[in-house]
Image 1 (spheres, rainbow, N blue to C red):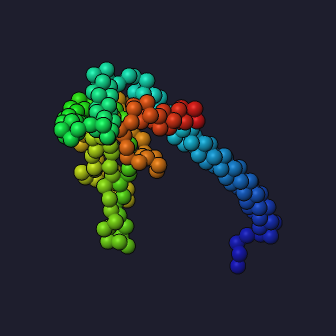
Image 2: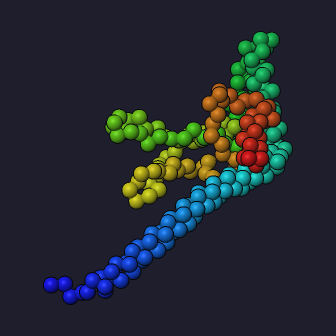
Image 3: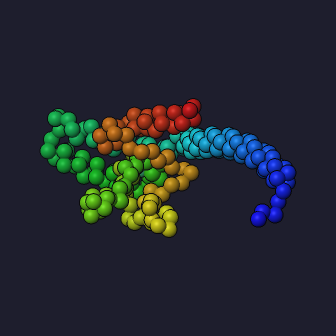
Amino acid sequence: MLNISARECREQLRAAIRTDSESQSKLETISQELSSLNNEREDTKRIVAKNRRKIDALRSALVLIRPIPVRLAQLRSNLLAKMEKVGSEAITIATYKKLLEEIEQLKKNLKNRCPHPFIFERQGYEGSASHDFKDARPGVRHCVVCKFEEQTYDIEPVDLVALSRRYIYKTLINTDTRVIEREPLDHDGNIWRPLGAVLHPFEVLVARDINE
Ligand SMILES: [Zn+2]
């Protein structure tokens, strides 16, 4: 025996149907608001990423605008001149040997004095499980002013499950006075060209991110 009259039953049914309709419409409104918030969240994420690229690019621009110390630039042009001379045929063997020694010494001096302001980076790869991680390779950075090169000496896990890793450098670390760009695919590794030519790719990349 149901302890409810037919009249009460109909009243409660009407009320329940009304509540259902109101709740449905409220759910739809919430869904629309959530979707709009989600879009706004994604848009904001894009703005943040773009602005961070701009911050990095403006910091890099400051390094690019600052002239290379005069003595360092002179040392480098002196080295380039000797390299050009050693390649010419109109020198004696004795001069050739002497020039080679001088070039080696100048390269050492340049490396010792260089603050390594412009760096190309080839990113490392931690290897794949299917290759038993034998295809892993370290990251490599090299200075385009003096050719100082460094490989990652260690990697540290970025998150607890170590799904992604950070490559660690000892000397060529990220600083505000250093521009680090990914090595262009067409870069032949020859940095022994005038500074203007060597720095041109950095200027192109930085200008792109500032004007994006
Ligand atoms: Zn350097």
